[in-house]
Length: 36
Image 1: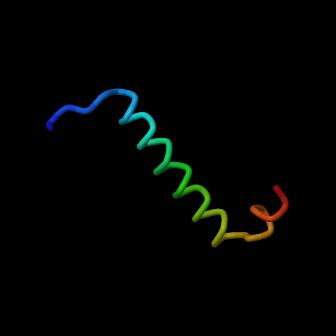
Image 2: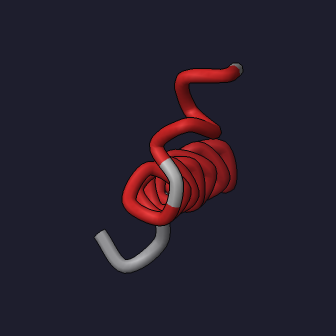
């Protein structure tokens, strides 16, 4: 339980990063998310 597969860690980190990025850009400027 102390160690996790590298794939799981990488995917989890990616999901967290994307979630924070989307949330930050969404609150900062919703036009950016709508444009893309």
